[in-house]
Structure formats: structure tokens, C-alpha cells
Amino acid sequence: MEFDIPGLSILLVEPSSTQSRVIVNHLRKEGILSIEGVNSGAGALDSLNSYPPDLVISAMYLPDMTATQLITEIRQMEEFNALPFMLISSESSLDILDPIRQAGVVAILPKPFDHTDLKRALRATLEFVDPDDIELQFYNAESLRVLVVDDSSMARNYISRVLENMGIRQIVLARDGNEGITQFAQQIFDLVVTDFNMPGLDGKQMVDIIRKDMGNSYVPILMVTSEQDLTRLSTVEQAGVSAICDKPFEPQNVKQILARILNE
Image 1 (cartoon, rainbow, N blue to C red):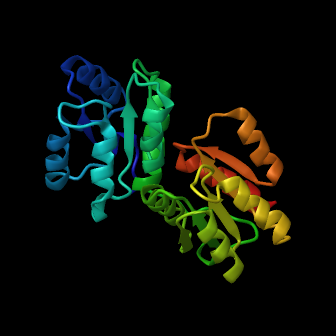
Image 2 (cartoon, helix red, strand yellow; image 1 turned 30 degrees about the vertical axis):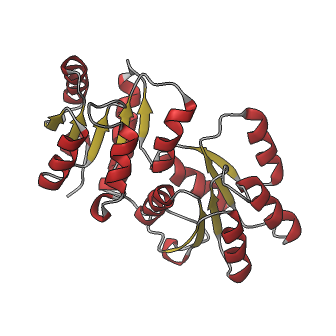
């Protein structure tokens, strides 16, 4: 059966009854009827085990934990380590938001949020619930060899699941830039997906080594990052990445970027 937005089941984690009603009204406008509401992190974890949803929508600050702690616990559960998660929060601190970006979310929406942004995030959720294989001109998705480099295990798992949902099966994981270079030297890859900010050898340094020291100017490299500093991002572009994608990212957006850089 082909899924659409009205067919999604939602777990809403929101301690404010007023905010909960606002979000539910937006979801109802999209025809979504299956909405389970809880007001705490513990309630969310209990609900997950009883009625697994297609998407978790959460506020940042809950009575018993933060959304960052909630998503961390969820990602540690094997059956939910790639469950779509959306944050709706008035929090604007980059330091506070970055860990939840790294964990892999379909969207971070402000309070109040625009209905169009919510709808876009719901469409991104469909890419997990009912994914389509990526269509490539020169490659078969199942034979595509991909190296994923990220110091966050949650981010690695999330990116891997996005790629798997596109039909990509041959994925090698590396925990940092040094391990990424080691893997790259030992195997042939058709694509590298890497984080920017990593301890030790960061994403830019890794790209420099691949492009200059190893003399590989042709393998496509996608940089996935939550970095906001435009000057630093500019230096990454000059280092030779094929594309840069923000965290959190929409699977459909990543699919379009990969189709472009792999078909060039």
C-alpha cells in the first residue's frame, strides 16, 4: 500500500496543553487522525513500546528530560534507531540545538511555526515510511559503494538508514576523519558522505587529503553539516566537496543532491 500524509501515525510529546492543541490542529489540516499525545519523555518511551508511530514530534523541554535526551534514548533502541523525529521549539541556541541535529531529525521547527514547513517535514517522514530507490544514470543503487564518516554514532546510523531507503546497500562506516582516510585507502568508493566538525581530522582536512595527497579528484564528496559559519563553509567548498547539505536534512533533498553529483 502506498502511504500518504493522512496515513501517518504521530506521537506528540508536548507538556503544554495549549501548544498541543495548536500542533494537533495543524496535523488535522493535513488529514492526520492517528495522533497519540503524551506530556513527558517517560510517557513517550512507554507509548513507543505499545504503539510504535511513524513520527515523533516533541518539544525541547519536557518535565523529566529534554528532547535531546529523549531522542538519544530512542536511538539506542535498535527497532527505533532511525525513527523520524521532529523538534518544535522556541530554543535558538546553536550549542543546544546541535546535538539534536547530530542525532538525525527530519526537521527543527520554531514556535510559532509555518504550516508549510510542517508539511515539508511530514513529506520528509514519508521518505522513511514509504521510500523510493534513487534513480541514477551511471550506477545501480545496490552496487553503489559509499563511505559514511561521522563522529556521532546516531548520525552515522541515521545517514545510513536514509541511504538504505534509497536502495543503497554497500555502506562502510567510519568514526572520524582518520578512520575515513584509512578506509578510503583500502577500498574503492563511488561516494563519500562526511560530517564537517569532527575531533582530530575534521571533514575539510579529510577532503584535502583525498583531493591533494591521494590525488583523487573525481569521487563525489557530500558534506553533511550543522556548521553555520559561512567563512568556514566557504573553505570547505574550496577544498573540493561536490555538495554541502545542512543538518537536519530532508531525505528527498539528499536524494536530489546525490542524483545530481553522481550523474555528472
